[in-house]
Picture 1 (cartoon, one colour):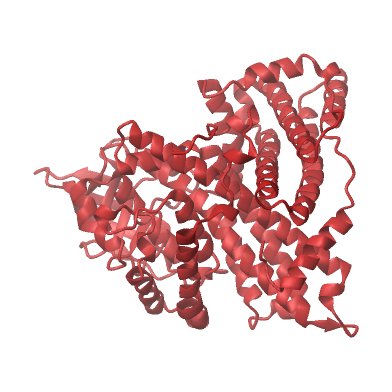
Picture 2: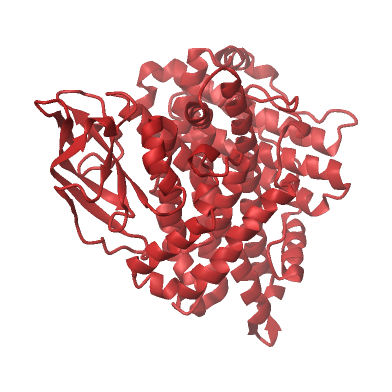
Length: 592
């Protein structure tokens, strides 16, 4: 592992890294690009030509298409070689997830199988379980699913009532209960099912085979989008599950569930990139073809604004995605060196970055919704027609804000997890926060003499972090242990943390591109616009939080400090966005 500075989850609030310490997509090697191209070729040959039929829906065709991807080895990218996988790095897994993310409902079925449907067994299962099941899940001979959510439980993962009672002879568990919103339900062979053993208060996890007597799968739900993805309820009526099919230890299921959800969130952050880039390509091509008033609509300033903003949001999300992916790779390596086995080292590495996983999930899914909404708008009336790809993309994108924990839950997690990590001593947040809060009158954001372009951006980002720290100190002091119930305030904090992390990741990427190529003009336009917009978002979120607790005198002081710290130089955003849009229009595609 190369010598690079790696921050703990959430530590970016009080520390920073240099551009040389982050991984950026411009550093993908030939093997990684080849894997991505294989994924893209599969979409072009097997998915896109059959998309209407898959979405009809045709679950047999979906199953067959998944099996074909397994035969090509695409299902084994994240799995170790001892179970038939390719043992690729987490960065490579994320690149594959990004590419497949442009595959509409196929992407949902594929990622559910490769991720939550396979990895609980791969990471937590016994060697016998891994050899029996994961070897066939890696090739697509078996298809997997993940059964956690229950009616009435929703986002409270541990509130499920499905029960597993140990048989009198101790040879099996008798499983009874109901699961809902199960992806791949009607063609999955293997189910990872979470249930409480006896009178346990905490979940355990089990491998259930579809063919076991008592497993009843309801007809597929009729959905707004991702119509080709099988989604159904599953009922368990006195299902006899062999004791050797428990994954991990009794009572470990809740931890497994949360860990796998962290993994699902972060990989969803990659998926939405592929979908966004596909929507941008569709937007640019249509804008270059469609004429209005005898000229291409791509020449209109209003259309250029939309295209540029689509690209900026996507490029920024991508910067954060691969930054944390490399951090995860490094932590996995450290875990292995400490003696952890492959599965535990991997899932512990992913789970550690819970703050960043939630950020990628929320920001990425909302960026995609912006991108695809504007793609429909650029298409005008045709965007509302099922003839165009953006119509399917629009319907399919909406689920991402609900998948893997709703964005409301994940927004709360961003702030709550960061604060708890600091309280636990992972990094010192409260010391610097208190110091800033007690010296508000001396807060300054003055330009430093001979400040370089990137020094200026670093100063802005440091100031955004200071605003977050000041606000966190104020709300934790005032609300104390009741803060978790002040969800609007928690959301304010999360918004600041999220956009600051995305902005910093973008800045580090642009600076590294500058060092690698000597030319980052178009990317500096992106960074200028993003920082300019971020300042307003941070200011608004901080003021909303402050005004929820501060008296008139304190509010005046706090808002004055927030104003100083979010003061950034003016940017000609019109021209910057036009430069970005013109590059897209010239290339007739997203090629950043």
